[in-house]
Image 1 (cartoon, helix red, strand yellow):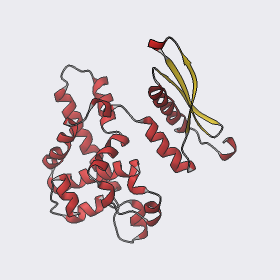
Image 2 (image 1 turned 45 degrees about the vertical axis):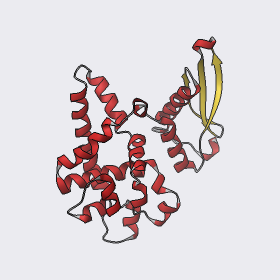
Image 3 (image 1 turned 135 degrees about the vertical axis):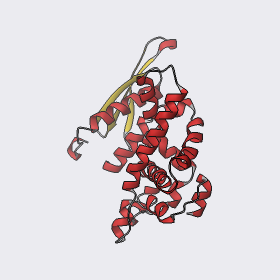
Image 4 (image 1 turned 180 degrees about the horizontal axis):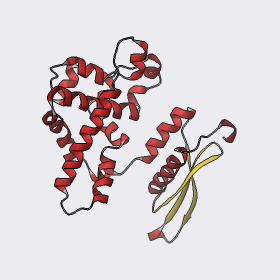
Length: 228
């Protein structure tokens, strides 16, 4: 844990808070009396949201609420927080259950993002708001514009892999329009089952649109084996 403290630039007075922040529920289930990080994640999510909201409010005095909300959502998305967690090597410090460890839980975006929020919550409890701001503000200022684009494709892959143990497939359905103004339409599917269609001015944009529509579909529908 001391090496993680060096990376984030904060020394905990209460080391148990950091240990709790790094403990996934799967590990706590296997070890009686050990607390997992979901409560700290809840707190860290709110603290992070406050700091990001205030930062965007001050930095963008002429932008409307819609812009601020969209930018905040992209900044605190699971995929973006997971990238931050990967950058500080957070996965190497997590306490996971045996099954979660074997299935690659230390690299799973949802687990990394949740643990990062838990660490921020632990820092807040241990030292108050200033040290959390000291962590978050440099990260915010280092965000490249492209990192603010939601990565629907990665989110979909993680969800499908978890539910069905296989990745989704992307298929080009059509390519229309003149060379300078192409429109690509792509289908994302799982076996024979179409999960979503998306269009864009290039294949990458169309894939992201298809993945977003697939995530929207899967939020309210289950895919059964006989459909694949």
